Amino acid sequence: MVDEGTLKALEDKVAELKRLIQQDGLELSEELSLLERKLEELRREYFAKLSDWDRVKLARHERRPTGIELVEKVFDDFYELRGDRLLGDDQALRGGLAKLGGKPVVVLFHQKGRTLEEQRRYRFGMAGPAGYRKAARLMGIADRLRLPLISLVDTPGAYPGVEAESHNIAGTIARSIETMLSVRAPTVAVIVGEGGSGGAVAIACADRVLMLEYAIYSVISPEGAAAILWKDQKATPKAAEALGLSAPKLRALGVIDEVLPEPLGGAHTDPDATADTIREALMRHLDELFSLPLDELLALRYKRYRDVGSYREIETGSFLQDL
Image (cartoon, rainbow, N blue to C red; front, side, top):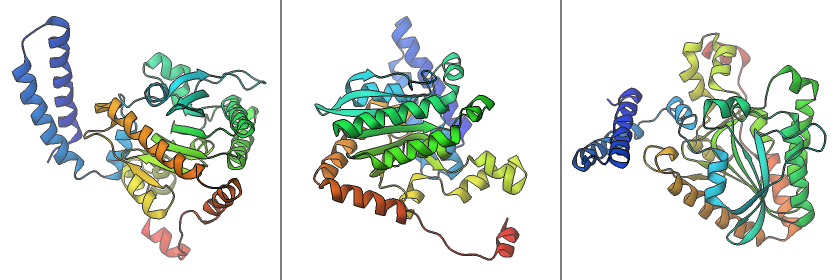
């Protein structure tokens, strides 16, 4: 059985061979071809039996395309707008104007960063109150200009620090949700990596919610759920399964509208193909949404979030026994 370590080791070997060929001009094409064929074989075996915890690790993969990388590949003429007009500019949650298929749109996206320095600066994509106030400001621009609003979601959650609490992070998330739900133009959200808690929902309350195949979307992280429910970090894989955070499960529940396929091995193996998939899906869904009268669009949005998901009633005692 193929494990994650074996797969990563072979990926690193392939990357090293490519570097040697490109930088040093070594003739290793035959060896590279053999390793690439072996890597594809192992990937097919590994990805045929993914657990939800495996999907969590893929959503967090260190080489997974970041928000700005996808924006630059999916959209044209991106022009960033900064600041919340009160505290400053939070670079963990960014946005601005862009073009999609030659038409103007407003774009929002989380930015985790690629290097360790960037990740610290952006708090791994965990935005604070200034970020969500900026998001609401850009949503207001989409509303006034009747421009479609598109968001790319990739965050473990909102920033949980003392400073964020002191500036009313919960209130700014609530205002962001309220504002997005009231935008008088089509809205589409794409979960491209992690969709964590209110930090994700704040810019994902859209008419259509799409997810990349190996992205995740959950009210809490598996680590957090394991700590609260099982009091044991070893239960993290079990928590991931119980949360139902994978794209196929969320599609079955009606929480999302479409699962977007990723290249074999995950989005990081072919960012260009991933961007092409996102672009095609966005244009297709926006065409459908623009065909609806505004009143009907808003009515359907209201109904969506009144009816989303499903639930069942259980006995409290039996639930605790199952845990």
